[in-house]
Image (tube, rainbow, N blue to C red; front, side):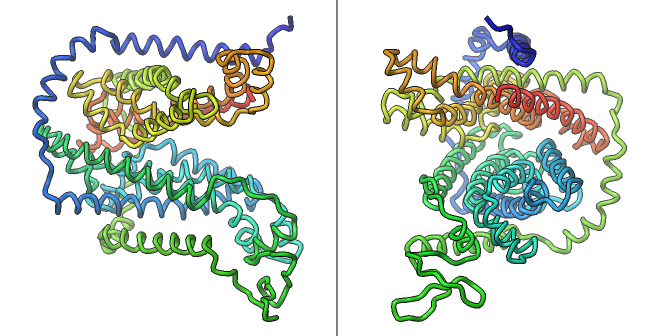
Length: 558
């Protein structure tokens, strides 16, 4: 029997340490049957106090919804523009130089690690209450995810079209526009739509610091214990998020399709990248674009108006109109924007140098509580997500109907902001870390369940068929073939969820769900911005440590 390698021992040690720390966190936060039993009375009282639900008048709901969607649309558009530029510098095959690539990668890491609520606090100080702070906070924070996904998509593009354009004398920018962006466009669109869903959910919690929209109204209702109005708005947010998620998913499928692209030769790829097309070998090069001879003998330099082109043009037109409406609906005050930009140096002076406000020991304790919330939520979320993710995988579920049902469950849970779960658990179990951990554990079902299902579906079916042909039962095939193949991806997803939960635990602390987020909010309220900086740096250090472990685990298990 071969001796285990140092790498396998290291992976085992890390996983064992995570499990022990997670169990300790669950025990420390008193997440047990007794806690739930003691909370039954609070739950019943809460339910009795929220009915009848008090929905605002239709006009107010439409106004709030319009404000929120305008902020989210502008923020997502801003993130796409910034991410496209950052990704060109961050991708190996398009970066102008190694120093710029590392700077771009650092930008992606930093923007992802800084919670959007911290950026909102900064921009609210600069530009005051309103939409601008929310747009900038969500847009810049989104670069952390969108920029990384865009860079990965660019690195995955075929080098053939770009090499051909380079050989023809094209500049760097012409190579990117003609040979890289057309290939990466499907991934760009899918990522932007996915980020829109995430920003919609994140916009709700920004209302607690003064960003206009549904989140602000929800915050005011809950702070004044107007539970009928608060829960009515919460249910409306849930419905809105789920509907938007379903619509964006349908658009992604319609726009991108589920079929793998057909392989084409180098010449065809170059022609396509330059804006032309090939059909039955009838393409001919003329001055400028690629041309095609029509039945009448003339040359046509634009593609025909097929159903595919008409649909894409309609999507483009709808996008432009949505951006125009969102920009108008955001009611951006350009004079206030310019004033805020000029005061940026003075505002940054308030945040530096970092300070502790005389509560350094307490900050360390609360940082540990935040980590405990994330650990406990990840473990409990894993226990909930594993069976749901397994039953949502088409190659594992007993029937296609079962897989479809649990996919719908995942979509619905993903559409509910963590803030809504936190509000419910805070009222039921009381303020503190227990509510935060329970909220994040339920919310993890949406993300972790989807990742588990996708990883199981991406396994090699031929391996499963070979094991099944040997007489193995369904459970044996799953354990020996499906689970074994997907194990590295599942471990990577586990630590990714932990990373997400650390940042989310910080955000939920703002609403009273325990941890260092509560101190972050208090420091901002009393204008101790140097303490805000210290807390951000503490969170950043923990997130970077977890991300470093996750990267090592992925390499070790690949």
